Length: 96
Image (cartoon, rainbow, N blue to C red):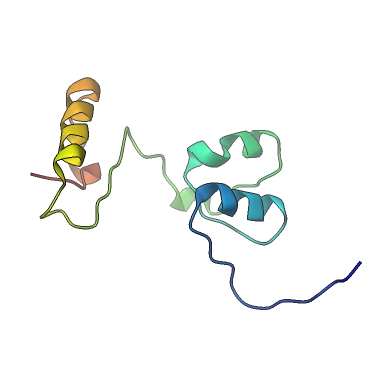
């Protein structure tokens, strides 16, 4: 077996890869609770800085360009608002 020491940062573009990296012992991650709750319950993950990670009420949507929201995304936002109620002002990142 070959062991190789690698330095630098791990950059991933998917939540599953990030969680797997943490499970493999690569380091500390910052992740939405829903993705990691079961690992916390299984004691495979430990919460760090929980005072700095308050629970978010309801849904939070983020889209980088609020001026040009695509019609399909606008339809999703309107649907979620109707079905789940209006988002709280501080959590409402998308506005008309």
